[in-house]
Length: 569
Image 1 (tube, rainbow, N blue to C red):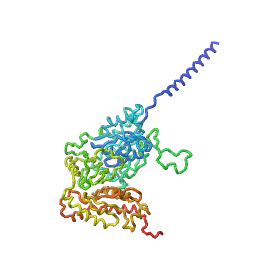
Image 2 (cartoon, one colour):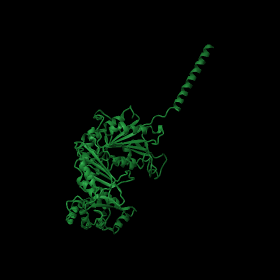
Image 3 (cartoon, rainbow, N blue to C red):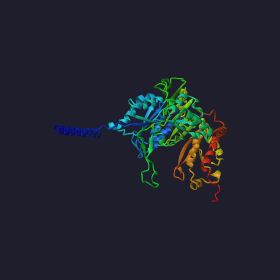
Image 4 (cartoon, helix red, strand yellow):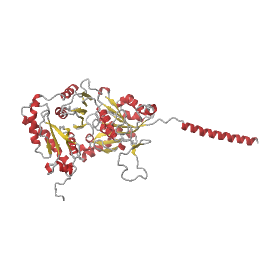
């Protein structure tokens, strides 16, 4: 009997212990603290002018349901890139506009992101990670996009984000995306700071070989650029692109929501599809081998003496920057000459947001100078977040601050009186000559208040059509055609800059204001204005002739498919 009692007691104790074990497990599971979330990060690197900011803007514009935060680092004291990216996000301080998910942009200005990582960036990452736990107003962000300065060796940043300990343990580096100018790569790399360029490629998991359109179909140069990139970025995936236009899944470790089972018809996929985050990450990362170890040259990518603001200490042999911000608009006639003829040869990069004195409505324009002295000047898209009219940043090697700032301030000054007096005669002589090319429409009204001549490319009269026929019967978009011409001329590196403008009282068939281009007849820096015919002839030869050459290729792309025969057969 005693044995039976002991056996029963042991069975009761075992059952009780088993029940307590399950009970304790249930309690731990039910009341366990929520696991701390991980913040996926994509690091965007690349040399000055490669297209990093364009990529960041595209990512924010196409984020759909993703809640994305961006940290933008700039070498200069004035963070133009952050302003452009913030505008593209469509929101400020995390408040979503147009029904999309929230976005936030943080500025890291004047220097190396490796230095800022220990302060602003590291604090910002932790703030985003703890946002949901602290109930802050930031909301919960799904992804962080970090855009580094073009002069940063990202090795230290990558190693910090890859650590399994420290303040950034919960930050998950999903990939390092390096944006490369194909033209620069075809020549083996930039002429200055080559070591930084090499280090950026060495860290890359994905390389965007950007601006391949500037190679103008030269397959040999493209192959050379790709070979250089593949040699410097061993194991990285290389994508060729124009304007950093790649699928979001190429740079963020996300996937598009798959079509639901049983869903059919043409409605699925007709609108923007949401993205889902990768649970573990790592899809974009390249395998690490001994030959691919990142070489870090210390905690800083740039020596402190090489980081300067617009208060430079004097002549320097390494990269420095200067910034100019003003409430005054710039005179385009002067600006186009400065950007094409007066920009110091040591300039690597220039950028800014500016307004023009010739515009009545003071529209804003995004300006970029990079690569082989190639320009971009296009209307700003979205909200202009800068409270001032114009901001300009110039980055180069040993820039003379006093001389450059003097030249930039001169862009705000009106044209000299002797120049203004000559403008009507010069413009009349030029418009008469320009009108002989029937591919263009020329505005021959002489506005004596400025030195600009308005024109647009149509190709209508020269091909036996009217503008209405090409628009209504063949769907030709003249605004797109002239935007193409603007980009072709300004990015050619031929020393010419055109400015776009819209004419509200003239509408296209599609209901949009017509886009016209503007050419400066004079620039205000001429030695003499006595011989107006000589001035007009010189401008026709060094400027208008370049426009005509570029127009040939633009028309070939736009209307060459349209038959000139109207017989209907």
